[in-house]
Image (cartoon, rainbow, N blue to C red):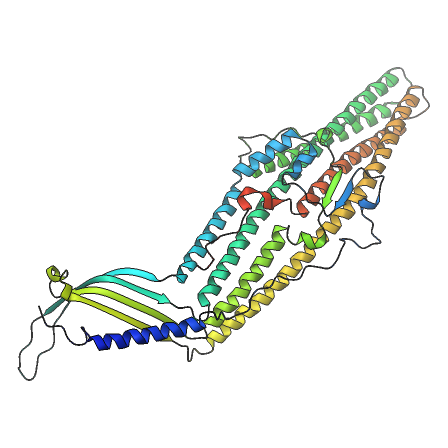
Length: 507
């Protein structure tokens, strides 16, 4: 076996000096390791407004005659749709939550974000590898001996470890950034859940109102047919002209023409609901939702504006994005400072594989590497400025998201107040139109009214009946939208509870 050189086998005094140097670097690193460059994230201030609408625009909370009352400062339950007291609606929501591809996608995206955090958190720990090398070399011809030495083999195997001391907190900021991005994905999962449940309720109500309108038109067609029979009897007895018969037939045909668009609307709503629950329209049919079997919730829990910021997943996702952008500034700032890495290796080296286990072939090395940026053409500074600008953009997006959320709640509260008035007015109009139609029909039988008066009364009844059904459905729709605008208690959903990940915590 060839003799070991002094460079391969240092003396004891030389080893002591090297170890002392490494220890000094460790002490220096320990004194600055607490330095984490970049800004520390602070949550944006909550709005100071105490109401969603101005005082001059009173909400339904100030209307004691309303069948719905606002309860300010109270939270809604996660299964808020149960307030409509529809077993069919409850079963449909359960099916959608269990089988929706949209939620499966959001879950997978969140899992991916958690894996990224675990990956970046690996930078907190030393990196340990094992390596094996084999080489064959031959020196050039020696001028003194005019002979070429033989080829030399070298085999080595052993572990190698390296550790980035993260003096200026670049790794810590990277993990902070990835953790915040994982929070964004968690809140987006909550937003997907909230959007799904809200859309399912919306489509169920669309089905209910379309069926109610179809039923209303069917009743009007039945009236048309009775009118036609009445006119034909009068024509047969010679009391009216044939023009009255033609007018009655025309009205019947016109009302029949109203049915196909309504049936198409119903089909679209049914197909949309099937897709929401994760079923092909040809393989699943939704229940026959009925407006008369849906209860209007009497109590409307409303969070105060400052609390809404912690309930709406879209606002929380925008805030987490601001946090990620803040941490990105720290990541870019750390690139401007030196980076210190410690490494060590222990291996067996020998010219023959069979002698690798010989203790005399042991070689070890301890090293420290310092890399400091000197000139990068301004790219590092530009990278940091880009991170600062990105933070400003995300902060503005957060502020806009908050404003839009408050505007949405204000609009729905105003809509609910107007819904109350509209339903009352439509009910009065329907009762009056019903009475007018009956009276006009009796007058026509006695010869005191003509066919045009009967048809006009029938049109008024038709419009009033459809208006009442639409107003009733709109009030239910706006109530559901209010529950969704309040956040829908998505945070109580088991799939979205807890932090996005624990992997981002430094040991």
